[in-house]
Length: 199
Image (cartoon, rainbow, N blue to C red; front, side, top):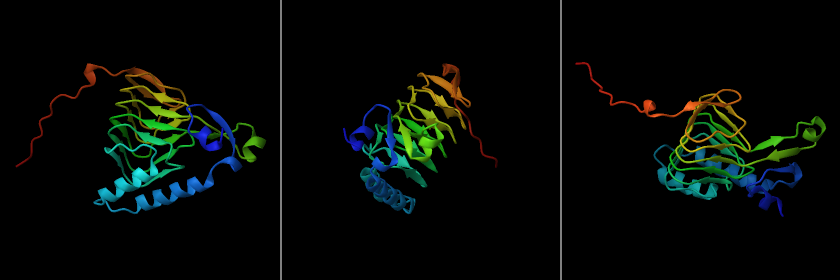
């Protein structure tokens, strides 16, 4: 199995930095730079760049600059995806973003990691594992998702949380490390709001 094939598998792996496809990272960096230079009204141009960058790019994928990723080809959106300002995706493994996903500003998805052993780490030995966001997920501002986690459908990750383990569907989860706090219930539905303007 080539390194590129290993990177696209749904399994965790270890790597030597010398084996990673640097030329593909250069391509992603260039496309991210181009994307981040676009004007807010250049929606068509942004869409074309995202289609070149992402492995799968649903037409309802909206990314606010500044955005950065490692490779791009390992990012897959499967429906409406709103990726807000200053998000980073280290996609050394596949990242699947389900329909109706909302990533708040400053979210980091980090498939990649390093050896805990100092000598291996200094030698460039790393790890990687996929990250999956199922449908209807909301990731709060500044949250960090580590490699190997799945966020279950309909779950909400609180702002600033560090997700090191998978979160079941339909949960509000918070903290460092992030843990399920309670289920999302009917009581969480917002009631009709009446907005009145002062004369």
